[in-house]
Image (cartoon, rainbow, N blue to C red; front, side, top):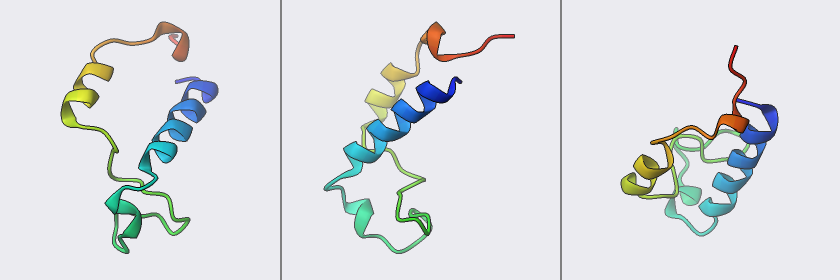
Length: 62
């Protein structure tokens, strides 16, 4: 994955986490930095749809 694609994805996920219950957790869901690192703010269906196909420009293929 390109650094730019990873940054965009992480920024999107963190923004979507705002207002979610996981932000109040004090367990392994949250990194010491405060970021939620184990949960997604989307449904399983959304995850499935978004991971069905690659966006070729977001990856280095060697």
